[in-house]
Image 1 (cartoon, protein in one colour):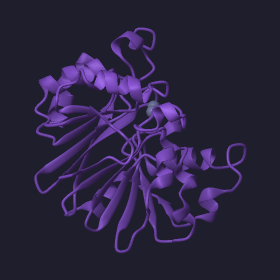
Image 2 (cartoon, rainbow, N blue to C red):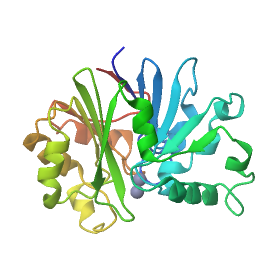
Image 3 (cartoon, helix red, strand yellow):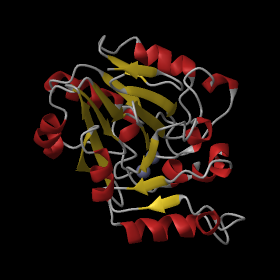
Image 4 (tube, rainbow, N blue to C red):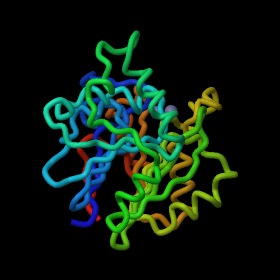
Length: 264
Ligand SMILES: [Zn+2]
Ligand SMILES: [Zn+2]
């Protein structure tokens, strides 16, 4: 196996379980990259609930794009956390380990959560980002870039055996990112893009930190990327609406749906 990319959660902001959202899925941000001896999770939104964690002989790593609610809220709700105590490393290129520890420990304590998650689950280990790079050395190449989002966010690029996957969420795309992102996405087999809004919706959502479906289209045509996956769907965008807009997209661009799998 080279790299397997699996989608576990495609919604932005808040999950939605109504029947109209069934096909694309209602869970918030969570993605997984699997290579022979390692499992890398990007963000732990509610989609993390469905990730099969810590299978035999795999290192498990969780990296965060950023720490908004919809990207961390599922961390405590994966059943495998409570019956397997192999170490799980958590990190982010956005901040150092101390800051990440403070953010996650606050979120999973006191007023917000019934148990002291990190106090009880000692196998959850928050580490500096360079520790992750050390662990992955020789297995998969991981690099990061800063994105345009309130409070910051990081995009990641994963490369193995000539194949590459780039994740760009959450990001309010601006022309001044064009050159950097074109370079970051150069030749990528798959680029995952935050397309929460349409251009029309974006008119009243400036500064909310998200890009549009139209901008995905524009960027894909400028870049040498091979395939684009639009994600972080608005929690109000139904399957029917996504299907309708999907028909207008170029053949190498599509909307992400839960349980979608790509192999490179
Ligand atoms: Zn988000
Ligand atoms: Zn965000």
